[in-house]
Length: 88
Image 1 (cartoon, rainbow, N blue to C red):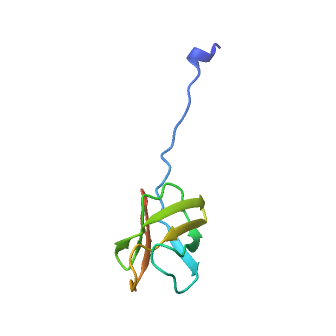
Image 2 (cartoon, rainbow, N blue to C red; image 1 turned 180 degrees about the horizontal axis):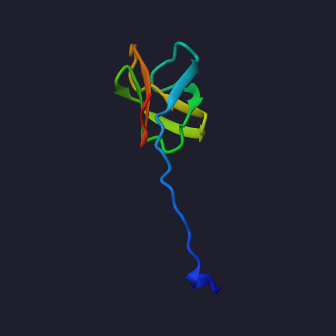
């Protein structure tokens, strides 16, 4: 058979939300101290927040690590990572 007549099957890739397993340091200065976040499913990250406040910037280092800088001093609370699969 010719390649034009071959069939290919496709399956949707399930979108899995990210999970955070750790971060360091536990205390960071706003706009100057990067925080390394470890976990899973970080590829495609669209947002990182510290206590609901968007990070000043972030870099997805790998599927399991992000480096993000808090934007505001005194921000406390949950660190959240958002991807097309959800938030974690």
